[in-house]
Amino acid sequence: MVTSSRARTGTRVLAAAAVALLGGALLAGCDADPRTAATAGDATLTVDRLDAATAAYCDYVAEVGVEAVPRAIVRTGLTELWLYDAALTEAAGPDALDPPPAADEIAREMQAAGADADVASFTVRLLTVSNALSDPTVGQVASTTLGDLDVTVNPAVGSYADGAVATGGDGVSVAASDTALGATFSIDDPPTPEEVAALPAAQRCGSAG
Image 1: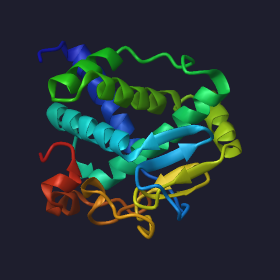
Image 2: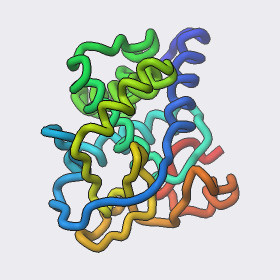
Image 3: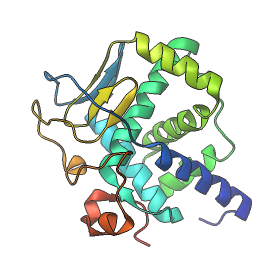
Image 4: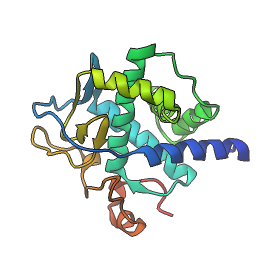
């Protein structure tokens, strides 16, 4: 797809910002439904939905040339963004966030890369949350509301504590899906480009360079 340089810059900035935000801390519940990735209050994120969003996002950032990161970090990061989306929806309703100008173009390019329209829309919604959380007021509302919700994260997806989701869940309750396998990395000990390049292609998210 051919786009203007300004629009392309916008998509790169939003995608790169979302990649940078992906990471977190520790803890999760044990008796997880293998079909459920996370819950927040009455809201539920399924593993299938998360994996579809991860695939759509990774295909997109590879297409636009964002440097690769471990896919597991992206998967847990998208889970974290979903938790904050659930919190913001609880606090202000589903239509409280205004998508950035690049959102529609990103959705179209995700579809061009193979995602269906519903998955592309859902994934862009999570990127919109990433963008919104850069506002301190929005971030405070999201953090406070999330802290008041009953939150669970499937250990096969990651570990959860204090509003953050990290790779390295204990994997006791269910087996990890293919997209979650691989080395464990954290935001506090990020992998080097060489470590990312050494991962199998199915465990990387982004451009191989």
